[in-house]
Image (cartoon, rainbow, N blue to C red; front, side, top):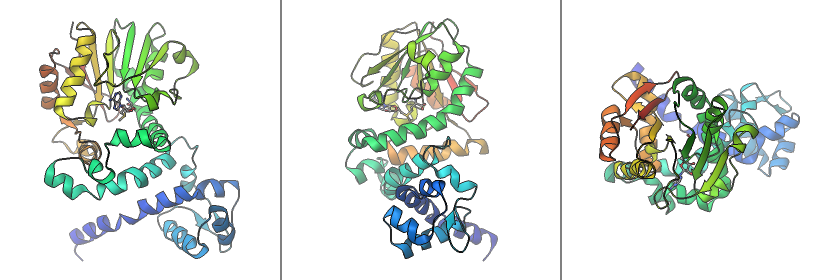
Length: 330
Ligand SMILES: C[S@@+](CC[C@H](N)C(=O)[O-])C[C@H]1O[C@@H](n2cnc3c(N)ncnc32)[C@H](O)[C@@H]1O
């Protein structure tokens, strides 16, 4: 095979390993092996799997650097420990999300590309967030995965954006509270409201530390139906990319309606022609498949802000992958 053909073959063969990692996560292999190494028979009994099939699964995963077999027992290698449920990488949750949410909807990519409509709805018979509402264990795993992604972005936001003159901040779709924990930690006089869907608020914003929690009100509400609380600034971190242009304009206009003098701080990936926007290009497709949203260029963000009646935004890249899109609007 030529180099190009080998490259494509390797990309095509890449589909197997993620599904194997998902199945290992579902069976709880990593947590079993964290207790002690186990023979294939004992591991199969503990995880209620077929001994031969399980051994074959793990033997395949071993070829991509996960788990180790000493001829008698399976045990962890350094990389596979990251699949334990409590590991800070939250890769266990991500694997569960991949197998339970992403795998089937990516199977509908052709339909999404032909129609422009999200594959998720066609495959699951409900929108992404409605599906999470019906499956609390998936909602919890999604929230933890988001938190692990957002933790780095939260540090970058605090290092980059001054939040000057902001006494009260509303975090729209604030999830488990990772962003607010970082922002309130850096601004001891600030208070906040975390707005999210009821099933997310029910989880109690587990990422909020005690100090931030004392200054935060949790509010279950639908951003498309309920007025937002009045605040000096509205934070939208990884929110606009979930929605169509019309829905984004509605969200931004609702921030403006709640307080026309407030600033709006959007944290998103920004699409560009540079190779650096690889993450944005892949998430853009992820949004097409999962929610019907999209990643956007600078010009596309400017148009959304204008249509919502907000002042033209500034764009500040953070040390991480995200950009802060800020409309001072004063
Ligand atoms: C991609 S996550 C981003 C979470 C968090 N802002 C972050 O940066 O990690 C989108 C969030 O929007 C919330 N959300 C979705 N639809 C919503 C709605 N109609 N009203 C309020 N929040 C909503 C979801 O529950 C979720 O927490």
